[in-house]
Amino acid sequence: MKDNLKFILLIIGIIAVFFIMGREIIETRTRLRKTQDQIVQEKKEKVWLQDELKTTKGELTKADKGLRTANSKLDFVNKKIFGLKDNNSRLAKEKQGLEHKIVLLQEEKRAAETRLRSLSELKKAIRQVKLEMRADRIEQRKERIRQQKEIDKWKTALGNQGFFTKDGKNHYKPKVKIDVRSANSSLNKK
Image 1 (spheres, rainbow, N blue to C red):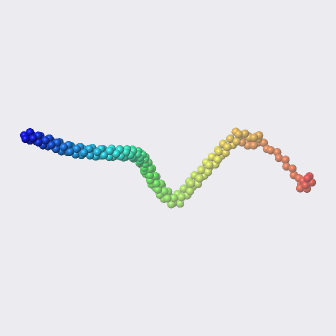
Image 2 (image 1 turned 180 degrees about the horizontal axis):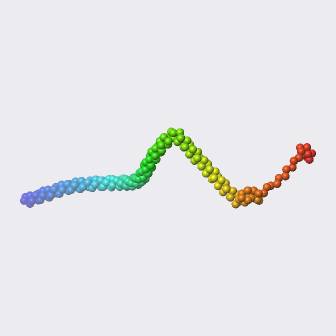
Image 3 (image 1 turned 135 degrees about the horizontal axis):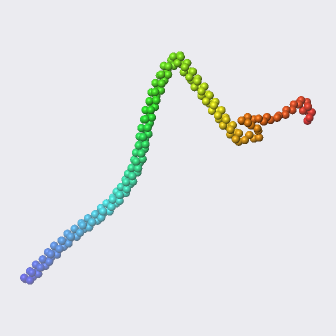
């Protein structure tokens, strides 16, 4: 019986060891499944994160292109603004100059109005205007004469087409024969 008891104890020990080992195997399988599930989940997350990374890289590339485009537009606008500022300052200076001229012209107008209010000053001014107009007409006439002489020079240079000219005047007078007949004699000739 002692042998049987040893045998039973041995079998119980073996069963207990198998039971413990089975439990450990089951726990290890459970942990293995959990680990596999985690690996699958992590692989899914990795794939999702890679897709997200690709999408983010694409968006970053688009944003970078947009930023470059915006920078180039900003540079263009800044250049335009700089040019407009220069133009604006030039126009402001011109405006000041024109305002100064306006002030001078207004003062000159006031002085002319006060001067022209008296009759003698008005007569002097009218005479002066007439003299200036006369001088202008004389100058214009001289200019027309000068232009005509220039035209005549060119005509002379081109040739006189067989006419005798001296100092721009024709000296050859064509002879014209005028034959006068009565109305009756011209009818009889027919």
